[in-house]
Amino acid sequence: MDQIVPKPKVRPFSRVGRQAITLLGQQIKLARKQRRMTAQELADRAGISRGLVQRIEKGDPGCQIGAVFEAAAIVGVPLYDADSAALSARIKRTDEQIALLPAHTHPDKKVQDAF
Amino acid sequence: MDQIVPKPKVRPFSRVGRQAITLLGQQIKLARKQRRMTAQELADRAGISRGLVQRIEKGDPGCQIGAVFEAAAIVGVPLYDADSAALSARIKRTDEQIALLPAHTHPDKKVQDAF
DNA sequence: CGGATATGGATCATTAATGAATCATTATAC
DNA sequence: GTATAATGATTCATTAATGATCCATATCCG
Image 1 (cartoon, rainbow over the protein chains, first blue to last red):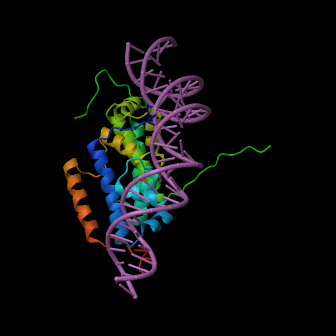
Image 2: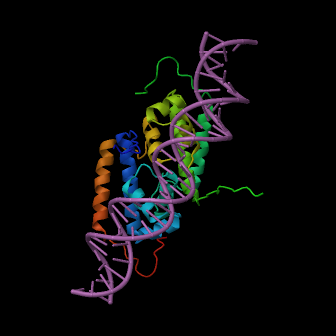
Image 3: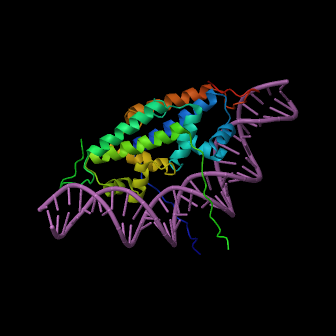
C-alpha cells in the first residue's frame, strides 16, 4: 500500500534572505569559538537546547528569531552595530517615521515596485 | 475545580535581542508602507499569512527567522548592508576563519567572559 | 596511544508557531 | 457623508519547531 507521506512543506526563500541567515549563523559559531565557549554552554546561557544551537549555527531558517538573536547577543555578534541605547533611539525614530505615513496603504492602482 | 492551565512558557530575552527584533520589525513596516505595499500583499509575496506579517512587524520573537528575513528582503530592508555577491564572499571568509580555530572548544578550566 | 569530551546527525514526543477565519475599527477614496 | 478597504486583534485547528535522547565521529589533552 501507499504510505501516507506527512507533507514536505517547502517555503520559497530568496537568495539574500538565506545568505543573511547563513552568515549570521556562521558569525555566531565563530564568535562562540573565539570565546572558547562550548555549544552546550551557549545553549545553557541562551536557555535553549544544544540541538537548537546547532541548527542556528547551521543557518536553519526555521529557528525562532528570538533564539537566534539571543544567541548572537550572548556571543557578542552585533545585530545592528549599535548598543542598547542607540537601538532605543532608533526604534523611537523609526516609529515616528511610520506615524508620518498614511495609516492605511491604499495601493493606488499600479503597484509600485520601487526600483 | 481547578482548570488545567496549558503552561505560559516564557523564555528569557536579553535587552538588545528584543530591541533588535523590534527595530527590524519596525523597519519592515516602514519600508512596506513607503512602497505603498499592503500587509496582505507582502504576505502573498513572502508566502506567509497576513497574521504572520503583523507579528513580524510587531517584533514577535517567536517568528521564524526565515519568514522575517524574507519579508525584510522583499521590502528592501538591508540585513547586512550588502548585496548577494558581497554576502557570498563574506560567508566564505567567515567559514575560513572558523576553519582556523580548533574544531573542539575545550573550555580551559576558567570560563572566559570576554569582557 | 588512550581517555575524555565536543560535535554532528538522527529520531521522536511535546510544545508552540502558523494559517485561516472572523470581527471591530479606522481611514482612505469617491 | 458613504462606501470600500486596510489594519489590529482574537480564536482555533493544523503543522512544524523544539527538547531530549542516543549514537557515531573526531579531536584535544595528558
